[in-house]
Image (cartoon, rainbow, N blue to C red; front, side, top):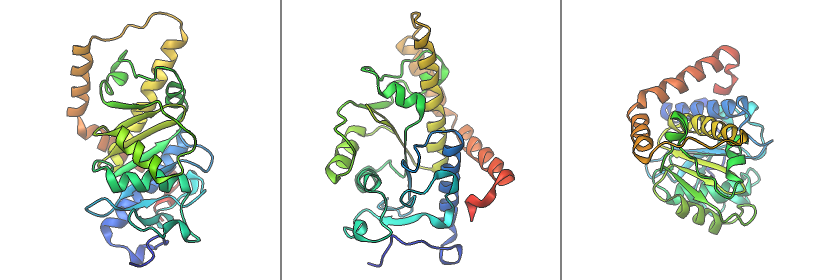
Length: 255
């Protein structure tokens, strides 16, 4: 197997892979725009092979606001030589995303970030997203919770543990850490992350009043969550609209 952890240009890529690169690069720029990122840390990845084991990911320690489609690393979760190369990704990124792409079928696009409100909620003894409005209800009974933070995720074992904790869900509140979102496409993963942070913001603001929360009944919360799931065209439009804004303001992400 050749060295997959290399930079490629538009001329060496298949059309489909190039579009995946453009979409993922757009997600990086949007994460920076919304202040979901953490300095030059945090990572987004996207599977490009049918089995999900070959994937795109950001280069080590490059700011999200400057990432371009052509700069994304193409990696293979089965490649044991990846971290020995001079262009190796960040170790924590490889430990989490590499193992997730190897073991979690629904993890085509993986977004791991430290958005302020979601991270604040993940730092509470009870990080449950209580259904107090439409946004929070979207995540009712649909979020895994990991309360066993043990330091930086820098081993394969930790990546495997996180994959096991995620189970068949798309979202995980990572206690004392941040959030992880998985979806079949960049558009869906972006939309989930956007609404996850908005939901956590709403809940944190409600907590800050000190008043009793008006929590939905389980039946209403589940009904609302299912109604969100039935409206899949909206998240596609959301991402396309945001890419259009990027195209108008700074299309360099697609280079």
